[in-house]
Length: 280
Image (cartoon, rainbow, N blue to C red):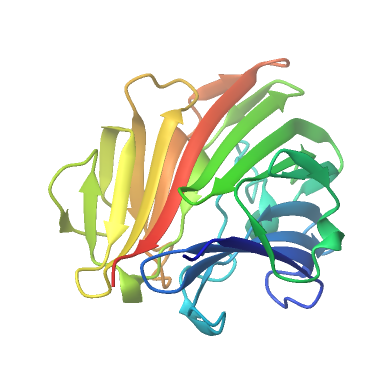
């Protein structure tokens, strides 16, 4: 019976990574390879650990194809009003980690010690970072705490954003997922019947969305058991960001530009569930 595996890798050349934890979760055919990266870029004002590009591997751990698009964010993208970019991760930068720790099956572990394929049941990762103002790349705007719980059912991500000043926000997100157009064509909202993916579609009061391929039989599921401001579900959006290669999935925290005022000391809490499955 197939199980979960991890391996530390200093040579994974994607998304400005200088080191990575390769995570292999079994599916009906082969493995889904999630990659937890330390992305570093002086040009982007970036040094943080984050969830990066995902790949499909066969049962012999040989790469077959990309399951998500290069460079997309999953965790956080926050935009202050009148700034030229978001805050968060490789795509946007202005984020620096201060601490990263992990547990394997409940025990503290050193990420760099897993140089060989290592089986596990449950992986927990916690990252603390801060985000800076894109205007000067120095002023600390927020603290960002992430806790990943990864196992056979996919990824549960708990996030906390602690605000360090008063701001007005444009569109911001704490839950994103980047399935390729080449593998997906159908979307199901809140467990409903599948319908054609349409770029630009928005659905209010959404708690769960699945984007999948009728032919590929690959399913991308994202749910928000907890999300800022919303008890009955947030606004869900699909876009290709200017004819890009993905049917990118978003849950808005602040869907209307310039209408959310943040006060120093405000806190956002969210929980996102991610799962990629192949039913072939």
